[in-house]
Image (tube, rainbow, N blue to C red):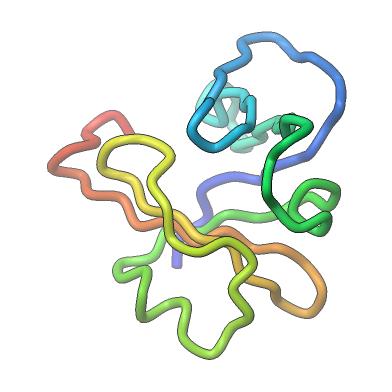
Length: 110
């Protein structure tokens, strides 16, 4: 696994907002700072567990998402926030953790 970002839920607006309507969340660009901090504001009708919407998570890149999910409680099943990126959320010791599989042939920018 390789660290990618930390996601911090907020109810406030923030600079550089990126709306992801298909996921019902607004995020900031985690690559615009050296520590990978990403702000996240979940929309009122976002269908996610309160744990995900209220507790910061750490995100790690993995080679094979399906294999990395084995043995963990899945909070959000695999989905694609953008082309070439698959993500899922699991629960580890009461905290949300995001696992990401990135296809670098599609996403050379990440």
